[in-house]
Length: 98
Length: 476
Image (tube, rainbow over all chains, first blue to last red; front, side, top):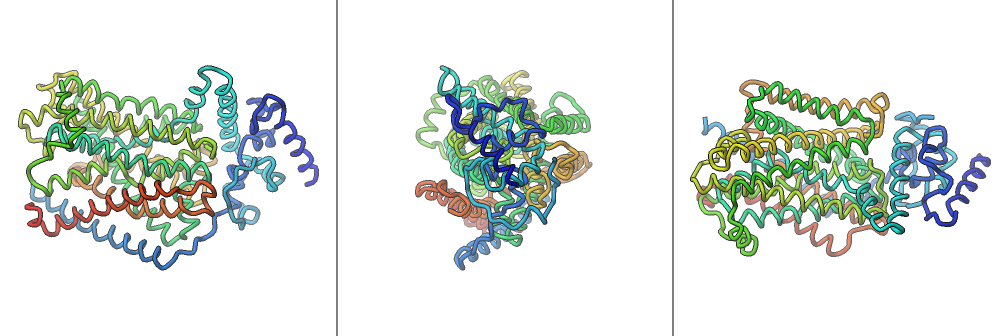
């Protein structure tokens, strides 16, 4: 584990090479971006952009206030009621046309 | 080296938070080094190109254009994808029934509404690197998540059916048999996804989407009265006459032609798959604005192309794609009619690709399986199976004799409008959530605009509902 940290620090040192903006490692070439050089790959991505990191971390559940819950329920009832109206009216329109 | 799709013992239990910290410098780097995937590699390559274009943008005269070229895509695709077969038919219905007038500026207004909404998905995707469905499940739980997914999958499937109706109708004008037209469209959908690379898929789909512009030469061949167009843009007049219920239905269908739930899910997932980061948000805004601008011009062109039907008193109330083209042929010539039919075909193909991808992204996010176009088929087969399976099922329905296609076409845009308020509410809650968005939470005016759009959609939906239940109120 420690050796990983050491390697990463070295790679971070390369980020600060003169003439290269932050986020563009001077020693990384596109052909290096392969599964065999994962450090180079990670150097181009944000911490929560890596697939494995996204699987590991999740945004927790938000505590919904009473008002928010009431709004979500009202909108749910709205959608269901309107869908029933749409289907009845379109069915009638199609039926009448025939 | 590849991370398995599910490894809960190692990869669960941490709370995410917005960060721009480099992965290689993060505390998790030692673990992540052993879990880099093919998807990460492709995304890192895309980021390398963007980072170097950003350097060139500072040092070379036209370097900024390369950066924009690399970063545009999801916004243009989502808007040109939404200029789909039923949408172009809605615009055509506006033009053929009411001529040049209210609907020209109204279409522009709907695209402004679309831009307001879609810009929020750019920020959500770039900051969280997570899709819309995943965030809804994370923050609101499975109960509300499944409701939201139900709306999406149901609406997407109906819309997908109408895209294949458009494909069939568009090519029907040229005498292509339905099975060949629909089968050919499926081949194009598959060809686009078999690249195993988001970037290639995006460029292929963009190159198809730009043919939405076929409606422009069709409109020019219809010799529009530009003075009347300018007058309509400035005054919103003349307001359509006739049955108020019919006008309300067309207004609703026109809104549904521009703002729909699949667009929210698609653009956010595409922004994530493209690997966009918070520093790319301005480019994402430009991409979204460009998409809205192009789509509104093409939509107005569809209206103008069908205005001759209005002037000649041709009743287009029940027209579908090929019938519009056939009716237009004696008025704007064979070339104009053929361009119109090709435009409907193109609109169906591009939307079929985008909408089936939207369903697959959402499915993968909810099921926590691989959900990226950067993944090879063997690593993300449920994602590709969802994408291809939904397209195949929709295509098959279109070929069933006596299937009530007109029922689906009439319903789809209206359902899109009705499903939008809950979708927009989730979007507004997420984009105002500091735990999710950090410093990129909505500002005051973005909230005013977002809430206004939501209220307008609810009013439009309620108006339609009341007019249906109490038709005498509107003289229907």
